[in-house]
Image 1 (cartoon, rainbow, N blue to C red):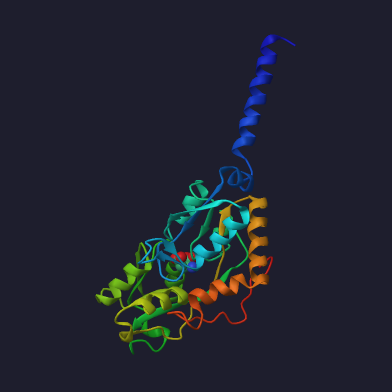
Image 2 (image 1 turned 90 degrees about the vertical axis):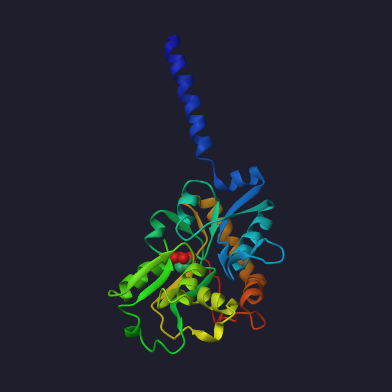
Length: 272
Ligand code: GLU
């Protein structure tokens, strides 16, 4: 072979090596780094929010990624994300996993992969007491929600005459409700109940029994990372079997918590 041929072969070989390094398996990379970076909310009461005493981000979502990092034997780094930023942050590689009240949808699943469902809720409305009896009372009104959420899309479909105002997060939408700038806030019942639970003037508001969608939450993972996804799913199923998943639920939403929610017959199930 000519010298130039050999050089080309060497270049191709090195390029191939680089390519396989970039395409490295996420599970292996996290183990090697010794840290798993999780994108979590920091202003969503109950799921990812700042503890007033410790100033750390805590919540249901945080406890799940803590358990996964522990099982992996790596440190956990938490990065705050919003409803709008969580998918880009994941796809750009700034976070390894998103644990951010994120509903599994077919549309989102075109861009990222989802774990087994680890929480289940539905979309409702938070309103001033005695202002809403049926969904007709909401149409044509100004409704607050968060940018980049399923809540925004579902509300547009369910209330075609309403004006949907999208904020960066739900506490901002709630502030707008308190100031009379919106007539209702809409998102998952689990989030609304936690915001209401913390409100000093909670007796002025209510969540009527009007549900416009089901919202199963999944942990988001970069597309095609099969080993990492399998590891996460296996861990979730083990957490269900050992009772750890229910313990985390009870810690945040159980009978003694500030916001009791129903876990009902929900169970983390492999493949769902
Ligand atoms: N679970 C819904 C979603 O994924 C609403 C809550 C949120 O914005 O995180 O969009």
